[in-house]
Image 1 (spheres, rainbow, N blue to C red):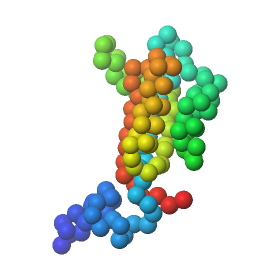
Image 2 (cartoon, rainbow, N blue to C red; image 1 turned 120 degrees about the horizontal axis):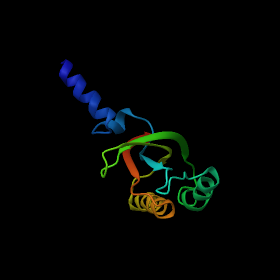
Image 3 (cartoon, one colour; image 1 turned 90 degrees about the vertical axis):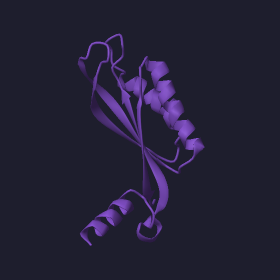
Image 4 (cartoon, one colour; image 1 turned 180 degrees about the vertical axis):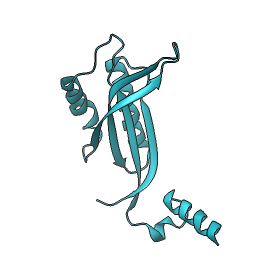
Length: 132
């Protein structure tokens, strides 16, 4: 019995079968986009550049709302195996699943890499239930 309850609980938490009967809200996706602010030339994307990026690139794609978190990222440089730490911004976007939102998130990451000479942008998508 304990194993069955655990399996059902995990399925419900993961948005699996039966979730529609037990969880309130609409099926949505929570996307987190991790944007490192250290540039290859040693400078950091400053607050003015961040605000411009947010206004010009992010907000037009997600005008209904979003959350921005400040963070400190850490990753291993593949060339030197050195641990690199840098300030970062984390976008939290809750949106309906679908190709349109996926393309919008991809465009944000591509523009961040282009504009600020970044090698990569981390994107994490998790199915969620959300009520506004």
